[in-house]
Length: 446
Image (tube, rainbow, N blue to C red; front, side, top):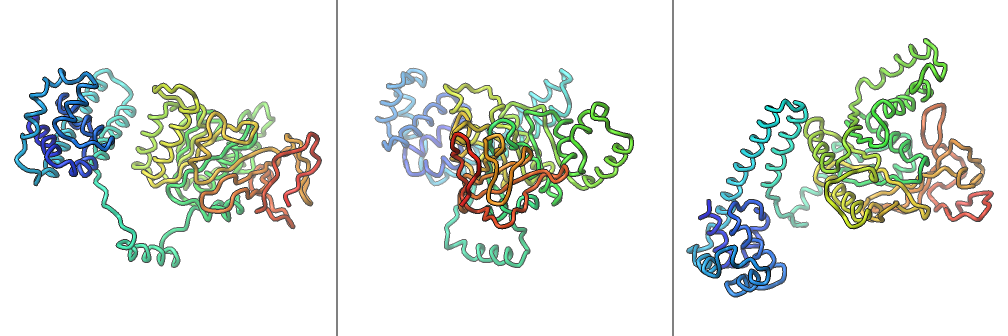
């Protein structure tokens, strides 16, 4: 194996241009020999600096980092420069090196699983870990085809025609929020959506209403609820869809539920029979959540993910400030939406400036951002022809990467069903003025 690693390094020194292609196939981790790994890392650094990869520059870089003695001095570099006779087979050499890495990683993963089996760890956690290990190994060998706009235009036109004829599903529409549908044109695969607001301003309710709508379209959904447990989340979802008072589900005796109430609920709940709503209330570690998202996508073909909420995620990595941590979470969730070709919704806290708390990254990264607030609690009593009460929520589409910003709509409970309210005579597409006077009496959206 050491011979192949040296051959690839020698080929790069002979023709620096091939490193661009090599970087698409292998990374530093595939090198087993620590000396070769260090040399390859030095090659990458030199290329990033725009410097030629030759004996002199490699020697200089290793000297600066104090690593020259680790590889055995200049003799090792000199031998590398003439190790390969040509660069004709560098792609085959890279693929062979990658395959050897895959074998090593598979063996390590298998050994880890064996150790966990011996300890009699939870079998489902073991299987999940094994599937995730295999996925990571397989994902490291995907070689993407280079796409050029015009050469793909026939395929693009075919896709467009199939969309027009209804052969390809439209973006996911939300029956409860018509204005949201208008503003987004439907939620498309890989959309990254942020729903945010201050505490108890309806952001979780809006999220769960949106997810439930999707589930009743027979699209499997995955919800990571970090703030509420499984039972409370289930009660809230069931309450909205069955017109059953939430407190009667949460505490039937304390809320004076009757036996008839329970019988009626058990009948209404049958409407969930054909839905697939997966809820995880136990996982807080960010990397484990990403792993479970990939796992659920493969096992259940999840059509939409949601995390409630971003600020409660944990990570073993350390960041200088919380905003850097949130920015990292947001960036990686956006990447995961693209990777899995599945929309991802994240719920965030808002600060008093109506921005996402602790970091602006979620608003910057997202395709759509929905800001939720209760107008009555903000001193907003009415809009043209409509008076707010304590059960009304104002949702403003603060950011739309694919349409007009600042569109808004009013949500409320009709019975226990939470949905957008039809308000005649009001153009809900116009901006909402969210900066209120000291004693606001009325909200003017015109």
